[in-house]
Length: 510
Image (cartoon, one colour):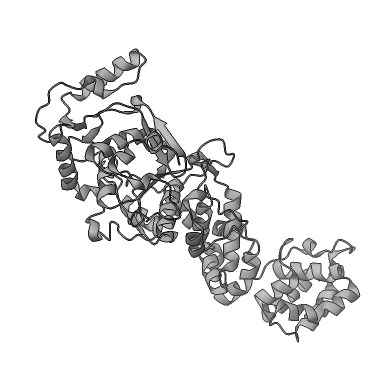
């Protein structure tokens, strides 16, 4: 093992044994695994956030621990109404449930930071008493001037360089700042990235509590993680550069470090940049509206940046929990492959039972289909296997329906005369005697399955030529150049409608 002082910095100054990677035995110190997801209610749930929540959830459940949903609602200016409900709906849609959250306060009290202000003030007072926090004496304009001067001199702006020598008593009307006790280089261990370090330039006198009485993220998340017993902090790589600030606060508060688990970024399909809105980074519930199944999204997101080490690609939630380990989280980013997402959704659609798929398809149909004279759940049930073998996602059903692809199943089509002509015939009229004969054969046929319908006419088709019979029969039934085979069409529309359509086609040709 590496020298703990070199690798883990001040973690061991507090006898913190939790920073040594022990993925196979994380509770060896007697601490139960607790993870959390702590979003801000400032808009829709990006898939990157949901993936972070998923990894935290899977690990907690794998280790028999707890998963907490905490809402960091301390930036009231940016809060979007309805976001908290949206966050909960997004997570629950893909099957993530929390042990404690906004609707389950439990032993930790409220999981809304806006309702925990007294707690932050208590911890702030600890720092004040130790001489490690002071009221910001400057106006916003004065701080802006300091920043501008640093930019002119081409050096980083550090508030600690403007720290006053004496402090007033903090009365809550001004921001409360942290006084960095020691400017030094920090070393720490990350469960995914390994040994990390950052220099003095990352340490500054950050704001702990704003003038409006709300804490900043830098301060509040450390207090809450400690109070809630969080053992593993999972978050994006954008927080690596801020970690020294966090570590300095942990030390000042004499709080042991949790384990840090950095999530790999979700990349665009080309793997060259992080996934952005232009690349498909949309609201997670938009995928629900498009018709992706929750099982699909759960499985798909779990495999972005995590490799089970096997060839298996389709996992149930229970299988993911069983297989998930921190050591299999990748350092490099994982691509958001929409083609794979579509493929995976089709695989899951193949697994659902017929009644569920009927409901899935019916929800996708526009009124132009559901309003047709022969539309019924019975006919739709017969049509479902035809849809199921081709469709990846519900929006494809809607798009196809809007072009009239499924209309033939629910209304008698008007068949163009020229479309009934088989390529080897001299004219479309050549099909008339064949249509008469197939009408006769099907009038006494068993319509219980496509196969029984096929059996009634197949010998005749072999006699006159398969194409010569099957082409005009299929067109007569569907009215389309492209459609399922005639036996499937006949089964879907039923015997009476089949015979009617064959007669209509014969009359059209006559």
